[in-house]
Amino acid sequence: MLKISSTFSKTLVASLLFIACAATPSFADPAPVVLVAGSTGGDVELKEDAGALNGTYAHQGKDYNPVAFAAVPKDGTSFTIWIRHRGGPFQLKGTPGGQQKEIVWIWEKPTEFTWTSFGTHTKDELGDSVVIITAGQPAADSGIDAVLVDPTNTFDPTTAKKEDLLKLAPAPAK
Figure 1: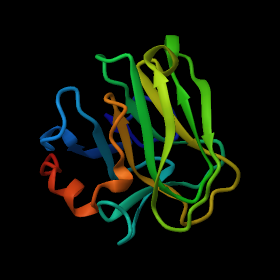
Figure 2: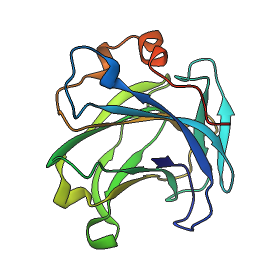
Figure 3: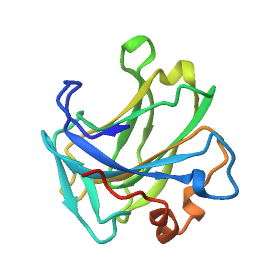
Figure 4: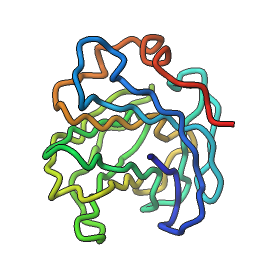
């Protein structure tokens, strides 16, 4: 589950709409999962934007604070991590042994929402979850609208149509 938060507190500050790519016939289990920002609280602001995958994105206004957390699947040995973002930069951190560890930065600051890969990393590097932080003084429209965790290391979201990804989304929890 992806949580959008500014701390590791137990307070839930985000719920997400899951888009399971397993429904795509070209994938076998395990399949990539896209996590899309749904609602938020705390220091992370959920902003509406027609260009975002589901019409909303998470914005963190404080530098060097988390924008998103995502669980790493228990099965699998390596995972490709993507974000769909505008602005930046963003850093991927793993949590091996329960401690945050810096892994890699995405320095690009696209002006439109764009899929960018953090690359492929081992379960040992990532731990049980990943944390994505922003850095510097984030621009007012900077943020993340989706995170993709791909245990197949073959899925390329840049070639998927937005409407096709959204067709895979289950109804939000009530």
